[in-house]
Every structure is written in structure tokens, then in C-alpha cells.
Length: 467
Image (cartoon, rainbow, N blue to C red):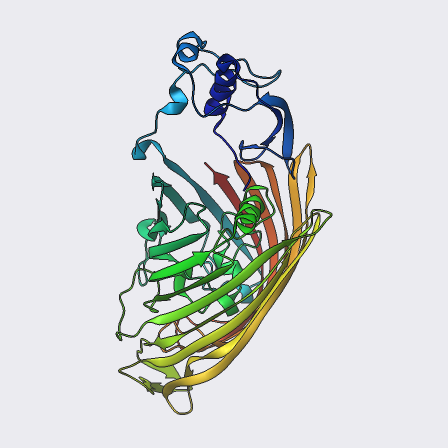
């Protein structure tokens, strides 16, 4: 396992080793330019600091008394003044908690009159009489409470509850604890409301995703990508380091959800209680391979099964008004899917694709009932990463399709999606991202009967600020 130290503790220990007077072997150290972590071996994105003497675990009292208050750092590195025994003091849990987040400001412009009737589950600001909108305003509170437990809490301050005409409500997205089961932190139990490990793009943060919205085929399986449950994840050390690098290096990784993951959850979606006393179960596999030339390739598969209880209501279709019945009103409808993914990270050319098949509840208009029917769909995306003095520039193109139900909408209407999107993301610094995209959409409006299929084109702009 590669070792790293906070900068202040690192310089203090270097000074302590020199004062100790015990001969030590000099080692090469490198700093990750993105995360500022210190490593003992070279790697992508790491800058050489120089050769240093490793600190001893025990420091003689005389050496402590004689140690200077300021350690000498290599040329070009910051000099940090710290007490000689600062590294021996452990931080209180509240000193280990960090706060970060991001805000996304969007503007959608319909190209043509027909496009004004477009609706998409991924963006509520698509449609008539829309202007600027704050798509997300996230605040993340996270950190290690103890050596074997960490917390993660994330509210969204720009939510819009169903049926509301106003925006910018605060709503919980994540609230969970990770309980580490071994010293190497390869096994952990995650309990609370968190992302369900189904679908690679669903696990990828919207802060990192290049396309403005997730593909409907995968995203239609889990509302808001999250639910209440308990999960177990296993990641060997080498995989943990690769997952972290792929996220922090700007290569658009999805994060560490384990090489293997499995668990149980309610199944009704985020911020909603269970309705049938029957849990969903999920299993997840994903591994990031690294080639000799430094190229990363991630492949994996996921599956879930359970019973979902559909919400029904009055609908008027073809001149007939009815409220559909449900084939299994008490237990809920059969709901199961499998999916596979492949991600060739943009170094500089990249490619990713996912596909899912399964069965789930869907409105049968002819029979006026909601019954279990098959579904299928997925997406493919290509991108290219340019890095230079202007920052990072990443053009992309994405195609998606879906034939299946929108089970979270009233009556679980059938959803037909064929969409092509092309755009470019420019990141001049770590704090600012600007994305411009054109989309040709052909999709069903599942928000209300008669569930019409609408074709149209959009010009979309998003400004994201990270803090």
C-alpha cells in the first residue's frame, strides 16, 4: 500500500529524523499535483520532491527538546512552522470533518416550436416558459469520526418536490456511515441512504459526469440513484488507489463502490419509505485494469431484484378515462434487471458504454392494467481530453436508447427514448467548469397522460462551480 502524509506532519517528521541522530536510509518522495498527497514511488500526476530521511517511530527526549520549531523543506516547497511534537497529537473527530460541494447553473434553449413540449426526467428546466435554473446546489459534509468509521452527509439545496411550482427546497441526498472491518480498509459496511451500486454512470457523481444528464435506461431503475439500505463493499489496496486516482485526476471516475458490492434496500427510491415490507437486493462487480502504458480500462456488471409498488391515478388516453389496476397490488410488481459496463478512460481518447435488460411494471393501455413487461436500453459515449495552458477541454458525443417503463411515474407509463447529444466541457481550473451541448431528443412525456412521444432539439449550457 502506498503511504502518504499530510504536508505539515511530513515536514515535521523530516526535521525530527535529522535531530534523532540515528542513521537512516534516504528515500525518494513524490507529491500528487491534484490531491497534494505524498507518495514513496512515482506515478501519474506525481511530481518529485527529492530524497529524504525517514523519521523514526521513537524520538529521544533530548532530541525533542533540541528540535527546531521550523523544519527545512526542499527548495520550492512551503515551510510550515509546527511544534516539534505536533505529529504525536491526534486530532479530535470534528477536526477531521471536511466541507465541500458544487453548484450547477443551467440554461436550455429549444430549437423550434415542437421542442417546447419536450420533457425529461433528468432536467426539470426542459420545456415551455423556462429560463435559467439551478440544477444542483450540493453541500457535502464528510470525514473520519474514528479510525474505523467515517460519515458522509449530502443535502441538495435546489430540489423541487413532486407537484410543487417553486424550486430550491432542501432535500437529503446522502446520509450514511462507513464501518471499516479491517486495518487495511478493504472491507466496509455502508448503512444509511446512499447510492445503489447498479449502473456505472449512476454511481458517477454529477460533479464529475461530462454529459449533462444520466441515460434513462439505467437511471430508470433507481429513483435519484439512492435508497435506504445496508451494503458491503470490498476493494483491495491496488483497486482503492486506482479508483481514487481516476476520480481526482480529472479522468471522470465513478468512485470506489468496491470491486465487489452487495446489499439490501427498500426499493421505493430516495426519501421514500418502504411500501410492501419486501426488500430489494443488489450485487455489483467492477474492476479498473491498468495497462503498462498507464491506460485504464474498467469493466463490470450489476444486477438487482425485488418487488416495486406502483402509484396509480386517473388517466385519459384515446378518449377513455380510467385508473389502471395492478397485477400484484399488495406485494408489488416484479422488478429485476441486469447491466454491464465498459469504460476506457480518456487518456486522451475515451469510450464508455452500458446496457441493461430486465422486467418491471409497465402500463398496458389496452388492458387498463399495470403488469410486468420486459425492458431494454443503454448508451454509448466517446470523448477526447485536451490538456494545456488553457485548462482541460473535453469534447464528447453520446447516444442513448430505452424501451421500457418509467416505473417511478404515476401509472408506470411506457417510455421510448432515442437521443443523440454532442458537446464540449471546458475546465479552466479546478473551481470552474463550463459545458455547452446540443441534443436531438425523441422521447415520451411520461409526466402526464396521454404520454405523447415528442421530437425536438435543444441547445444547453451549464456553468458549474466547485468549492
